[in-house]
Image (tube, rainbow, N blue to C red):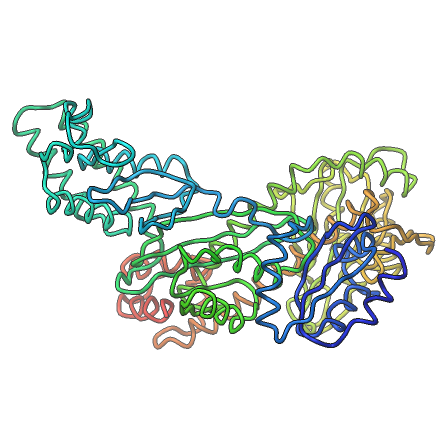
Length: 592
């Protein structure tokens, strides 16, 4: 970044609008919207910005802007500018809905097939289907159960094709089937794709029994296999929901690690899970603005817009609803659920996104970063085994430490550990003591077990945290390199109280930042789980017939609310040793 970019930011007007950040070659690298251009763009240049923002700022040469009448107009303009410039650091839906759909054509005798292209000719679309195997099962089931036409293009009257003679097509081209009967087939296919697959199951079951009675065992076996496939799909589609009368709902959860981003979408129609999709990108925005931008792009064609949308982050729900109402004439309810079934389904989407982005992070080649880290720290070996510590607490409660392991510069999740602090008084806040305790407990175990020690230890914080870690190692009689990473300026701190500031694009620093960010995420998530567990105790104890003893027994047996909700009342009653009437009351309460 040159100084003129900062000066340009200071001179921006305090109006709503869009800003375009360009590199030294004049290429647009990031587009954003703002209610107040000056305030928003200047926030990029604050000293306490995160590493991702700092890396973006270093590439900015000039900043252009466009004023709009209000924030809604800025959202529309931002979407158009992203499509126009394809900025490298924005989230991009590069090929629209990249997963295939099932299309039912708008014809006298409709066809059913998979496609990636949406044609606005009145055809109906179902999906998307990210699982190609599942999509194949759907289409095979349809072809086996219904003799629909398979020929492409306009239906030509005349000689039937080979499919008719193979009994794979009902022969509308020769008038062998009427529109009404063919329409019944199409209706049952639509019901099946919407999740109401009872008609198809009954039909295949009937055909299997008829074939068996006729001693046509080959056909009966085929129908049996098809029936089993349909039942498998029924089980796979049935996810924590029993209300078949409600409108369409989507769940969108975003997870980011450094510059890697994954958005997970789960689609429900008529109470059934009909589609799951994962969208991956590399971007520099924060999770909230990135999710909002993604949703505008994802639904902008209007073809798969639900009536209700549940999201994982505090996006501007009113703004997004206005966008779809004004641009598409559709009403959309946008919410962030805090509890109940919508919260649980959204958390499932979030876990899918989290696993995906972590898998991507592990696949990154960080060799150059490790070589640079060796140079920065002056250690004698390539630091293939890194460990990092972070502390999280809430007003002195639920103080926890996270310990993260990186192997060859990538996360090794199975080696993650967390520590609940034992040496602090209730409500005591002491990050140095917490760091000392966590480091001591970790390496006492490794020492006693004669396990491998890390090539480099990083603690989140400055010289105070570094000294706490060194003190713990000294008491254990251990010695290996330790550094701190002070978050405000991403300053690397050494035990001799010297420090170094590097360019945020430095590959060695990026490895440390990734390690620290993963420490922070893991510590915070564990801290939240502890708070959630206490909230679960309180929720259970609020139910008539469940006191402290029973709530503790239930939570010790099943650990999470989700696990409890997977049980029947009889299973909960038997497993937790509580009366059946109380178990029924618990499940009713937790379901709402």
